[in-house]
Image 1 (spheres, rainbow, N blue to C red):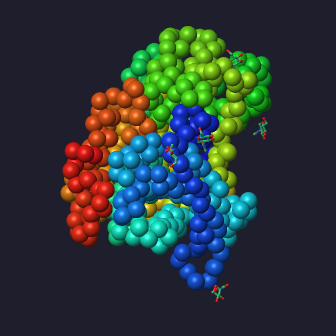
Image 2 (spheres, protein in one colour):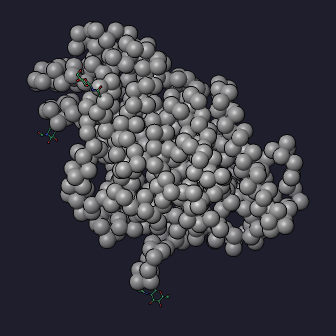
Image 3 (cartoon, rainbow, N blue to C red):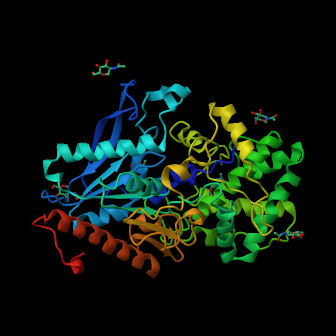
Length: 488
Ligand SMILES: *[C@@H]1O[C@H](CO)[C@@H](O)[C@H](O)[C@H]1NC(C)=O
Ligand SMILES: *[C@@H]1O[C@H](CO)[C@@H](O)[C@H](O)[C@H]1NC(C)=O
Ligand SMILES: *[C@@H]1O[C@H](CO)[C@@H](O)[C@H](O)[C@H]1NC(C)=O
Ligand SMILES: *[C@@H]1O[C@H](CO)[C@@H](O)[C@H](O)[C@H]1NC(C)=O
Ligand SMILES: *[C@@H]1O[C@H](CO)[C@@H](O)[C@H](O)[C@H]1NC(C)=O
Ligand SMILES: *[C@@H]1O[C@H](CO)[C@@H](O)[C@H](O)[C@H]1NC(C)=O
């Protein structure tokens, strides 16, 4: 099986309705006729790209445009989870745009045939997606004459953050800067210790309790021992209320992977605010989960009963789930077709392994030749593991400018993030103590810790500065724009 990490998106998807707030503005959805292939003149095909636009607060005199670089999913899930842009649009008098990434959500170049064969799927690449955004920005400047002088600030989280940073590197004339939140642009072979991700997950659980950490660490062998025969597989299926019973060791491994992914995702979303919009979920869910794992020395079955209680915090906090589906987040899963699987088999080769003794996860190596073999078998393509590095520079980004790389210190993906300020003067790393996956992009909440509040304030000041410098350079100040940084 290919070790693909999906930025926890499959799980985030099932939780999006839980954690997100509805879009707090009037918006329209517009469909932009986009080229399937930006890089040759043979293929004339086009498709409809979905874009959310809100002009509620925009002053029509060249005021800024906030542009979200859509990542691997339905664009509404990002619009629902990026309160930072919506909340700051009024003070910046900004137009707000969320662009859907090709091959995700409803922006499918060849409809339901998009994933059917390589001659259709082959147009899924970072370069094409960035070119989509570039064309779209041009289009907006044409269709809204008052936007001709508008500075565009790009935002993105996770893979979207990588896109935002890379967009500024490739198209610096189209945007004044990018806020790249939790963007692991250094998580590529050769630059990155593949244990980074799982080390941070482990540390996060361990910080709540040693017994919790040890219980999870011990549970993998317990699962294998209990599930080593038919009666044991039935016992696990019954005690975990699985929708589909486990029938062999390959099912058992899938079940185990599902649990591992669940813990990884939880480390991404261990947010300080309870989610009580549609379904309740506690603040700092890992803390609640860990309270169900008090004793790591229990025998196998009692330990697994505790483990069931623990994951129920995540999957069944409201008591509404009738069964657990361990296939829910299998590869590709319910995501837009199999887009991420393909991307991780072409350009987005992000190694993840677990080879340290104190890892809370089972030992797992990252084997590029195995990954390649699996990718060839599944998609007929082999990963180009160094492509992202020569295409975008890896650590050689000294010629870039105006990018904020923000990372939550507890976010597992921060392991591949830009954490140093030394690359160039205006490449600014902000490490947010205690924060998780692109937490700064989320709506403000009552429990926001001070470091998170400070990080957002700093980001706002930096973005304001980019915009001021831009207006100065073109010598145009929108009548409604305040040059006073205290007013922002
Ligand atoms: C976005 O939020 C709205 C309102 O809460 C909800 O109806 C919709 O399903 C959400 N969309 C996604 C993709 O999460
Ligand atoms: C939507 O637009 C109407 C009319 O301009 C305005 O009254 C309302 O406050 C807007 N809604 C939001 C959520 O901004
Ligand atoms: C592409 O479109 C142009 C202009 O409409 C047309 O002249 C040309 O023949 C088309 N090319 C192909 C390969 O369809
Ligand atoms: C294991 O069982 C599942 C059904 O639960 C089946 O789809 C799969 O092919 C089986 N795998 C092996 C290796 O027998
Ligand atoms: C979810 O919780 C309810 C209420 O406690 C329980 O009846 C149900 O079996 C639980 N679902 C699962 C999948 O365990
Ligand atoms: C892991 O544990 C083994 C045996 O306990 C030990 O020999 C080895 O040095 C440890 N490795 C690391 C990286 O700590």
